[in-house]
Amino acid sequence: MLSVVIPAYNEGELVLTAARTISGVLREANISYELVFVDDGSKDDTWPCLRKAVQEDPNVRALSFSRNFGKEAAVFAGLEAAKGDCVAVIDCDLQHPCEKLVDMYRLWEEGWEVINGVKVSRGKESAAHGFAAKCFYKIMSKAVKIDMSRASDFKLMDRKVVNALLGLTEHSTFFRALVGWVGFKTTEVEFSVAERAGGATHWSTLSLIRYAVSNITSFSAAPMQAVTVLGCITLVLAVVLGIQTLVRWAMGNAADGFTTVILLLLLIGSVLMISLGIIGYYIAQIFNELKGRPRYLVARTCSRDENVPAEEKEVL
Image 1: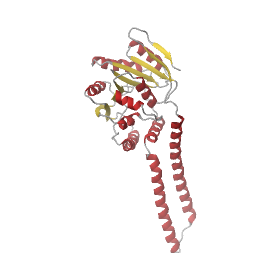
Image 2: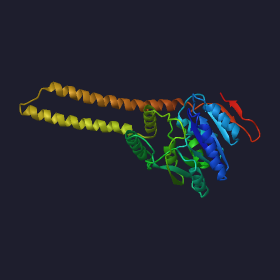
Image 3: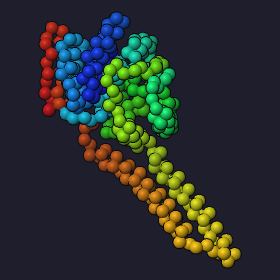
Image 4: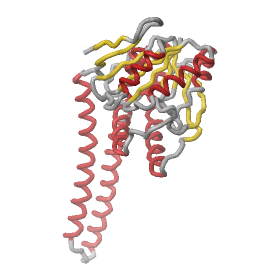
């Protein structure tokens, strides 16, 4: 059986469409399936719509967080709830073409253990967003030691891969990078990012920046290494300015030092503050890991059997 994990946050107008569309594609391909929706603490009518989706199709199950824990937590909650021999992850907005699930499933039947959906095109986005994404994936590619320039959360994994991911104990996770890190027999399916099936994206520029910073610091030591690079650059500048000052002093042409001192203090102070900020962020990550809190809290679930009405259960 194929389990399809679908994170949803404030997607009330799309969850029914997503459930019906994905179910239709898998039924037409004669693939045994279940859809596992994860409501990431939505504030709209996502949960009532998910209950309706469960009522319409016994192959649909849903769970809801006690609050918004983020997409990474929603993905892992879905992986933990999935019962299939293989598990796929797909976005609720249908920008990942669900027809590709059939191609991924056939490759899994051939023996592949990880089938990555890779982007042929990123769809419509601003030049600034494209440049930022390119820089982000370049850093992550070096950390994971694989090319992530076209990576996405759209994947299908064998049960052994899912179990390996669930066995990782870290609190801060980056799903698409961790799938590359665990390895296994991997292939790719190309796709073009489609337009949203409806509504507007809930990712603001600030939330994307926070997401990128969190994932980089949880998976890579590159920012810490950047502190060393900044220190080396500052040292080189200090040596150059020091030599220049000594030469001019020896020639009896020493310049007024007030401006130079102020500039040096501003430069060194800026580097120190940036470095302390980066180190502080890593200490905060360590603090969060040591607390050992769960990645998420499930408040309620909803599922039904073939001939039984949808049943909602309170978990907390």
